[in-house]
Length: 462
Image (tube, rainbow, N blue to C red):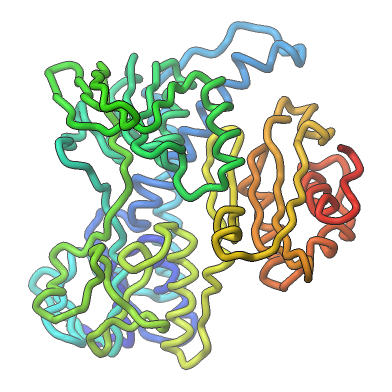
């Protein structure tokens, strides 16, 4: 048994960042983690391994489609799936060990095991009970399924199972055209699988800018992904070596069946709070099963806080990290704050897709007068040289003030380019501020400047 200022439950991006920040601010801190390694879903079975497979499979795509045009002649590489898995696991290991090092460096105690909160101020792990002035729940989320579909992580898999399949399937069915489904669908399509994505709604990537989503779907189709929207999955029958997916098309209620070697269920995630004992404590929950908190991340029980995927808001690692830092600062007597209007979202396909702030649909709904500055990567010299000229940058700015309200990018390195706009928005910049900032040539970033110019007198290269 030990006494702490803060005990954090969960070592994902929210939990480990919060723990390190608490320790940096002079609070005696411990983090409880039941996995064998730190880092939560993101580092172990989420963001990091999926990006490793996306990177490896994109290199294969480049070799197969673009190398010869650049004068790089030779036999296309073959896929050694076991070696690719080994590479992915090595990337995971480097990152999780890195968090362990940071815990030691910052004197954060790792309490190994699964936590339960028997009463406010106490955390039970195994047979030991530790005390703390503040308890922070950062236990993250788990894959959600739909009625009639049972995940067995064999033939019917979640994102976790999809990251470590024993072999590349010939046919992969993906239920859900959100971030996870399209990223992992892209990986296996590049590796030679026949991929069909079934989406209940009439548009892929729900909530995304409509213009981007339309363009994105066209590009994914060119890459070999078959996408069926308006498809209501009724059930999945898992047989010994394959599965049958039954679905109806919402437009006419016609019934269809899809055969696949593997079915990936990518229908979102839900908060993971199992075993914490929240019912017994009387912690208030939302209708969607999230932990209810106030503006300072306090739950309804004194001394217990929550951040990340277990509370309201987008289930994004960086949103959890920001909340972890803000809460650490609040507990240390500072003014921690998260600007929820400037949280970027990225899809790491190729091309990448990134967005921040308002969409055109949300501005129309709010009755806000706005203008659009748009620039295609076809007018960007670096993009053309790198076979990456698909897509565009779109900036939305207030008609009266020219203040940037949102931005949407589909194109090369979109996940990196979006942050220039995030910083501008944090400082309340106008589109003209971006347009008048010198950008190095030739860079992809010039497309952002051109989109900003398009909010005024017009771009130069379009």
